[in-house]
Amino acid sequence: MSRAHSILEPADSCRRLLNLASRAISQLEPSKERISLGRIRGTGPGIHFGDFVTALDEDYPLTLKYPFENSERVGGAVWNCQAILNDPSIDSAITKIKWNKGADDLPMHVHDHTDRFIVVLEGRGFFHWTDQSFEDFDAKAIHTIAARKRDVFVFRRGVVHTFSTAEHSMTLLSIHCPFIPFDDSKQFRLPEHRWCMGALGHKPTAQILCDLHKPNTALRM
Image 1 (cartoon, rainbow, N blue to C red):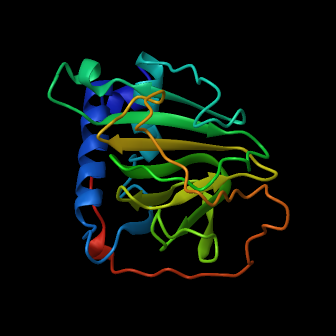
Image 2: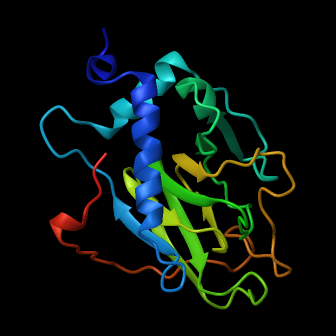
Image 3: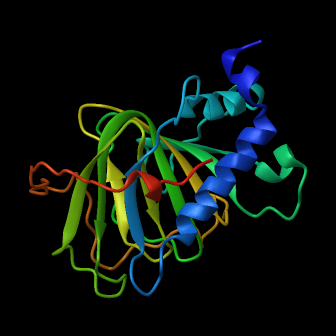
């Protein structure tokens, strides 16, 4: 028996990941804040976030499909949580998204109908977002932050954003609440002003940040 399965089964992993995403998204007040950044970690000996993903990977292996959101450098696949939990009432899903090295061509976009809870599983890249609305977006107020293993990005529907990679690839676990099929026209929209990291002259400003929070503000799985 693997270490992952000695801790939990795939159904338990799926349920706990969905619950964690739901609670994290519920912490965001639409009228005040629509995005939150953090880190995910274990709270005691023998607890590893990777075990939750391994439990799903071992019993429900995924084959990533390209392109993802019209980018040939990005691939994705989805774990059907309804089937894993045998519960047709579940409308959220857990996806795995791989950004290949140099995947810098996906424009800023928006999800109108789903919220996101995203964890970086492997590799590194960048997360880009703006406070501007979809209608007002003109690429003049884009924030960029490094995305590295165990970083967490939580945001509500309507946030204009994208990810990119440079010299490294990056794999994300992205929980969609609710899930809309990748090939559905309602999955995402592109603003009139197109901006992507690979466009000529678009380079993030380098800086160092130190984010602090009280230990008791963490969410637990």
